[in-house]
Length: 196
Image 1: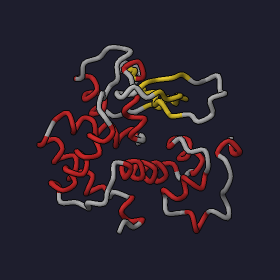
Image 2: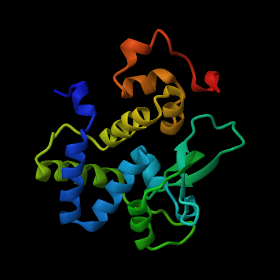
Image 3: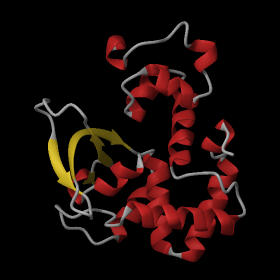
């Protein structure tokens, strides 16, 4: 049975995971390293296109899924299975040489997907690497996102900045990521936009 502890990959396990991924398949390492650094949802990672990566400015525009189709700031993209998604992009800067080294080694055509893979295949590879790395088999690729949320909060000490970085609409979602829901939910609640 999964517990809350299973949602949060610890840094030591992340390092083991990435070491094993690198030994198994360099391309898997590239995918999972990028996923961990960007803190994306898998769906966002698999919709990332080369036009979203700015090597000169060291910026990545993350194609965040948008449920509100009325917004004029959206675009539509297809994943490898041809499923159509409505996108609301957010651009983030990264001072991470390894990330841009990895992305720079891949074939780049502006409209192409950076990682043209299926979600299920990636999930299966994730579980296989967890087993080989001898780490918690209940981790999921979303565990990287939880670690990114915790790390962002530890650096900023700011729930709103963390929520923006994680692309959360509601601060309670961000607090859940940081194990702070019970302690801070009385002081902080509502939509992120209320604090801007």
